[in-house]
Image 1 (cartoon, rainbow, N blue to C red):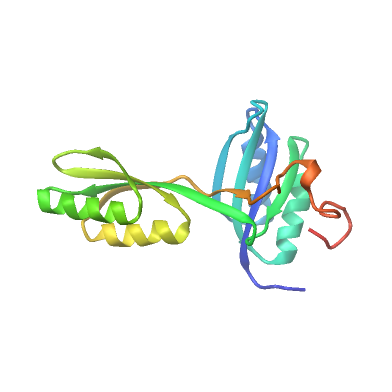
Image 2 (cartoon, helix red, strand yellow; image 1 turned 180 degrees about the vertical axis):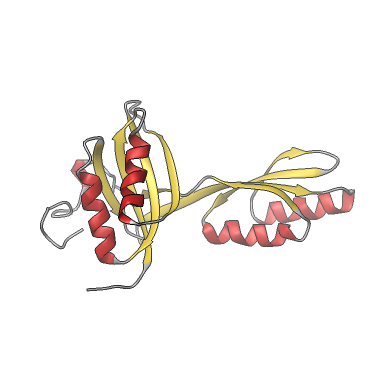
Length: 184
């Protein structure tokens, strides 16, 4: 059994109602698992929300938490997204100190390099929005840290699979959700 700790991304479709997120989070804390990233929003069906969860676990723990999630009445579907097929993105808002014209120009140049959007400018600050993966967010944060980051907020990762793969029943891999098997 592989006991290597790796990042696992879960897509979970749940009822869009009060208390569901709390039940899902309690399942993780009750098992002693830490959620590294969590993003929740409604889907094209307003009665259903999609939760994207990232956790650092070994293979056995990932299978166990998926199995436990499926047992919750409020859960419609659970799918582990493979790293090879997943498109992962995060939104980061960063407010940077920019008290002079020269500093503002430098921050704008960095924003252009990272394809960040400048969403607010004042005589003292510039606020940027960056969309990308973890490495992009960390790289721009490191560069902007030299100017003084006043505030920073990250949404948590959202993810979809590339191509025709979806969380819907029609595109699930054969055997993917067979209970009692070591396939996941």
